[in-house]
Length: 290
Image 1 (cartoon, helix red, strand yellow):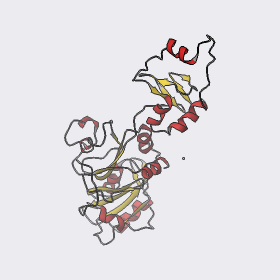
Image 2: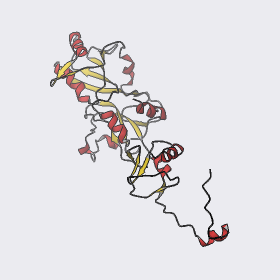
Image 3: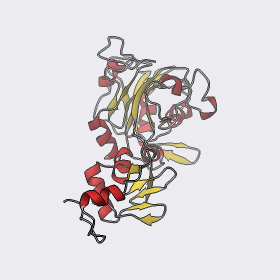
Image 4: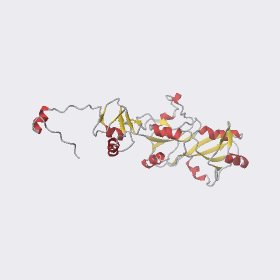
């Protein structure tokens, strides 16, 4: 799929986002060496040819900056402070060069000089996030394959029938953060049921539904304005979309459609179904601050 540019009138599902009513429960110069041999500067230079540098080597501060954790100038400060290790040894030397195969740790965490990429997809129906279908043409990775040469992974999983926002990245820290059981980012879902949701069942969901011995709570739930009462808005923190389905199935409703409208503050605005875009710098900062 090509990257979407500009607005589109066919912004599938985005028009209902605003209909979910509010109020329901629910961070000098380098020192000069003494010329002990008595050579003049030019003589010394001619007798001491400068060794050729290995093109595969990279300055440590650039390596750190390329990993996305901070700028080169900030990296120099961390290096001087002893916060950077190469192959298990603390390195404080300015201009130190990293060789291929070296293991670099920044504040205790391993880093690689790969630019971090963040891609937001409005997932269409019938595309899988399952790893065992990586080569299948109906895998979501095929929809974002032109976004980056890096190996992207989906943040969380969605079944084939679920549509809506899905984030991809090569940032392992971000992947771990938003798939951990205790992650606290909110997601808003538009749920279409096979029949109208009874008000007493809506109240039951507000109070919490017990599923497999665990009480599941939603942040908010309400009917979507100007829609049949089978159209429901549900706001939850869970990273598992299957839980959303299970809530309604527990009360004998079938979920006909499930669409993720928002994800951790990200929305489907100007992003038609099947299209993707890169996150803005501000959006990346917001995600890291969750």
